[in-house]
Each structure stands twice: as structure tokens, then as C-alpha cells.
Length: 342
Image (cartoon, rainbow, N blue to C red; front, side):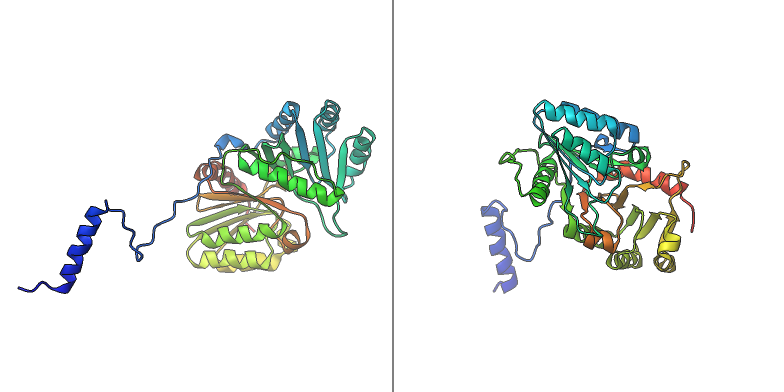
């Protein structure tokens, strides 16, 4: 009796599979890529202003080799005096600030008089320096939602502490910004060999693509607390997420009612839930953060606006971490309950 050809092919395939130890990869079967996860711990997320300031002081105190500071504004007297002490002790202290913030004038004058390396980031007229972070000894970094000012530390804010490869990336980013400002390189070590943490730090033109990538890949829930959302592509992406069945909840500043009323109307007409941030102490929003499908977060240095994405000097962290997302979701969900309806 003649064996049918399909069966013959099957028998040959079965024999080859057995003999090869089942290591054959079929071209028509696509392997699912392992999900990239960050190992950022929940205690690396700082949500209390007093703790943020305390840990900032401790990190600077413990620095042995270098302290890099990039902020929009700095006027905290205790921290300024500490930076002077560290510089005098031989630690390389370098600071970049925004030239358009009034409080920086006295700070820059004071620190320059005490031979501390401080410069204004060379922003053009109409452009603001909004990147806010600290790097200590090339291997520990903190990304801030607000500045080191009386107003900043009194605000409802957030900071994220990094001890992996992202801290080294931020050190190199500071070196690039410092070179752009002064034409002098800081002479960083060639490599710090820090553990891979799968956290993305990006600046300027890299911020919006990372945000859109997170929005466009979400299929369950997006919850965001952002001062303003008006960038057209970001608005359209959030609307598209809602239309494909994603729950979208946005907490924005009450000023959006008069600054961007058409955007608020578009969100509401689409079924996106919008509420206005409500602080019992009348504090403004002190950070810009979103959680996607309770799996990843993105924290940006400023609002999601065309001005922020195209003109300002901005930064962002992207953290693919269910642990971090779960920790921050408690914060945002509480903010949601406290927020008011438009």
C-alpha cells in the first residue's frame, strides 16, 4: 500500500526532530521576545518632599569623587553651602542652571565667588532649561520633579533614585551638556560597569517619541498626572487609545480650563476622564507622570506641550516596571480621588 506524501513528510520531520534533540526552529513560528523589565525597587521612588530633600543632602554629603547638578533653579542655602564644602574638599562639583530664573542670579554669583564650577545652560531667548537631576560619583542619580528651591521642596512633588546603568548614562549626558556650555569635557571614566537596569533616560527630541510609544502600545489603562497636555500628537494618541478600548484618566492643572479649553472638550467628547488637580494646601502639580497598563511609567521634566517637546531643554525617564507602576498607581489613584471634575 502506498503511503500518502503528507504522512511521509511528517514521519521524516518527526525523525529529524527526535535526532536533533528538538532544537529545530520553524520559520513560521515566531518566538515571543521576553518582556523587558526594570529592577527598580519601590523604595527608589520618593514621594515626600522632606525625604527628597533629606536624601539629596545625604547623597551630596557621601559623594567622594564628583557631584553633577542640573536644575532649572537653585536657592536652597543649606544645599548651596554643602556644595561649596564638597568643592573645597576636592570633590568635582559642576552645576548647570536656567538663566531665566530670577533666583539663580544670586546663586551663580555666590558660587562663582567661591570657585565652584557653575554655569547657565546656554538656552536661547524663549527657551528654558527644565532638566532636573543629580549625579554623584558617576553611579548614583536622582531625577526630580521640581527644583531645589523653597517653593520646589514645599511642593507636591516626586523624585526617582537610580543606582544602575541609567545613572551612568545621566553622568555622560551631563558631560555632554557641560561641554556644550563651556567647550570643556569633564574627563569621565571610560566605563562604570554598573548593573543594567533597563531604564531609559532621554532628552529633547527623544522625549516625545518615548511618550507616544508608551501611549500607542497601551491597551488597558493610562493614568496620567500632568500640568498641561496640549501637544497635538500626544492628544491624538490619547484619543486613539480611548477609541481602541483603553481606559484613559487624566489629572491636569485647573489652569487648563482657560489655557486649553478645546483640548479638555476634545478629551471629554471622546469619553476620556479628566479631573483637575486639587491640593489641600493649594500647591501646584509638582511632577509630570503617567502609568501605562500598570506595567511601565514615564516621568517627564515638564508638561506634554509643543513648547516643551520642541523648544525647551527637557528630559524624561522611562521605567518598564510593574513593581514601580504598582507603587505609583497608589499615589495617582489617591490623587484621582482628590481631584475635582471640570
